[in-house]
Image (cartoon, rainbow, N blue to C red):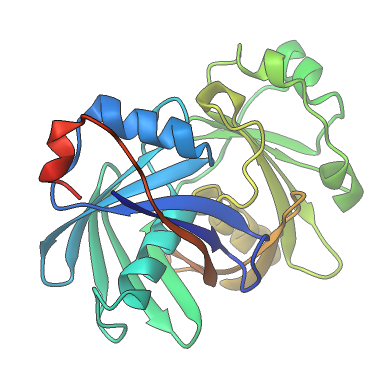
Length: 270
């Protein structure tokens, strides 16, 4: 099985968010896809199955579970489909997924992800949340299985060191931390230890929540964001009203073969 490693939301290798990409004729078993994702050990590995012209089925796996939505691995998969001549860059890509239909198109060097919009609802700043994040935020909310926190100072976001062990005990998928910034419209970080991702370098699905939140606060529909992880990444953002547009660049870093001995099912899937 051919495997590609792509750095998403960057034009420079060794930055952005790395994702594994596997293009298959048929999906391997759930167990095998999970084991492959665990072996690759990036925050997500995508498996992409062609369905018809311009139409594909995509599934995403963290090192320990299947993900309901993943933007950077979708960006990486779109990049590979175009780079390897499997898809015409002038045509839209339609992905069938657990999150519904996802549309991707390309404008110059930028790949544009048309993704669902998730609103943020305020919640109580509970003692457990306080113990997890250690710094009192200006706002605490919840959105589609994620704790959402806004801080007054960008430095607080950049220096945030949540208690990851304690975060796994909170009934959520992840913690999002965000603030305004002098250089970008906003910055963010994303922590998801419960699904095997202590910190995601650049999380596009977090921006399904960040875009409507900051669009309302800043009174802007188009914004430039930065994920302030160690690797970092730049995201173009647009609020479409009932959807969001998340745009980024991508670069291929590794192309190789996964040598799985005595796995009969791979004869028909790779």
